[in-house]
Length: 331
Image 1: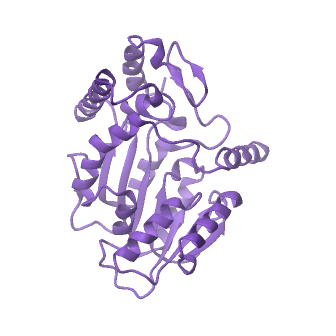
Image 2: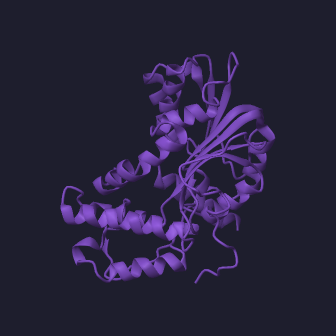
C-alpha cells in the first residue's frame, strides 16, 4: 500500500509539473459563459471566480479584522490565489495573509515567482505539505479549495481539520468536482452519453488529451495512476456531515463530457450545428437534474460551521438534492 501511494504521489506531481495542462476548448468557454456564469451571478452577485472566493472568504466584505489569515488547500501554481489576493485588495483588504498548501515544490516555485512579480510577497506564505498525511495547524478566518479536493484521499481528516481550524463565522469556499470517482459517468448518465455517441460523426470522437479516437465511448477511470478524481463522489456527503451550506451552485453531469478538454476541441461554437448541439446538451442536462434522474458533478459552494441565516442558490437545488442516492449500485 505504501509503495502504491508513493507511486501515485509521483504520478500526481509529474502530471501537474508544468501547471495547467492545456487551455480549455472554445466549446467549454461558450458553455460556461452562456450557462454557468449567469447562475454564478445570481447566487454570488458576480461571475468572476476570484471575486466569488474573495467575497466568501471575507463574508462579503464584512470581516472586521486588521490582518485576516486565510488558507488555500492544494494551491497549485497559485494563479487563482494571486487573483483572489488582487480582489481582496480591491475590496479594501491590504493587510492579509494567504497560507498556500501544496504537495509539489515545483508548483510552489512557480507560485513564488508569480507572487513576487505581482508585488504580493508580504501577503503569502508557502507551505509544501501532503494534506493526506498532515493537515492544518492554526486557526484561519477563511479557507478555500479550488479544484483540489478531488485529488485528496484522506478527505475525512482534511475536512475535520478545516472544521477544527476555521474560526467562528468563517467560510470554507469550495469549487470542485463531486461526480463519480475517477471522473467516470454514473450508469444513468452513461446510457445517455452512449446513445448520443452512437449518433456522432467520427470527427467528434477524438480524445485530444489521450490523442485517441474513441469509436465507442470509453467510461475512462482517471484515477488509475495518480489522484485524479480519487474520491470525488465522497466530497459532497462528507461536507454535508460536517458543515452547513450558505451558498451553492451545482451543475454538470452530461454536458462537460463533450465540451471539456478531452472532446471539447472537436466542437466550434461559431459553427451553428456545434453551438446548437451544446445548447441541446445543456438543456437536457438541466432537465435530467430537475427531474432527479441524474445528479450534478460540479459544485461551487460556501460552507460554514453554523446554520446560515440565508441560503443562496440559483435554483431549487438543496445540497441534499444534489446527493446521488447511495443505494444505486455503480455498474
